[in-house]
Length: 239
Image 1 (cartoon, one colour):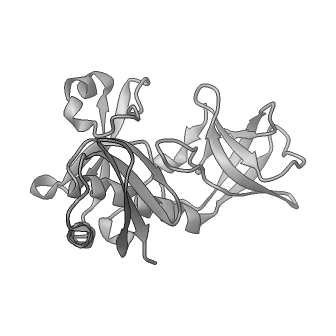
Image 2: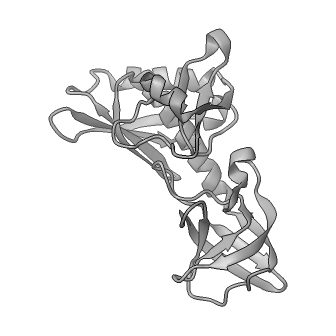
């Protein structure tokens, strides 16, 4: 398996890893990585691997077989041999924007307390699809409410519960179309706020900022009709 260092420290920009396998498609598997694999609406990380006098650009990161994480080169190239110790370097600006957008979408699900039927994240914006027959009447008021939640600068932390505990608390699951990351005996919960100031708690395997204030300024973009009961709400980073 690949040790998921992005879980323990989502702010790590560089680290050392050792090549343990190559995939048939030309991907690289390390013993431990800071690169987040595509999943849960969040894109896979990009960056570069450095060893000796070699640099290999990584275009994206995917989930492989079992618990493997596969780093996908940007173009066909000679791969570092199995056993090579190398330096991993994230495209940090891109990753940090993903973190800001992802946490912002959790807050959007607080500002619009309705079931979520889908979502996606990019470095510029994110969107959630809600089970919402009618669009919000006042988009400006929604934007102001979301920005107010961000500006509270609440801590973003994690907890873990067992699969059985999640099954016993189905209200924690907001997403209707994406199953929470279960199957390993425990599930990660992302919490926004603490104690009486807690405003959100939901299963999530993605990377997040440490406080909501790091999200910065946002704006609500198009609110699109995607079916009789679905509305897509787009949220953009302003800076």
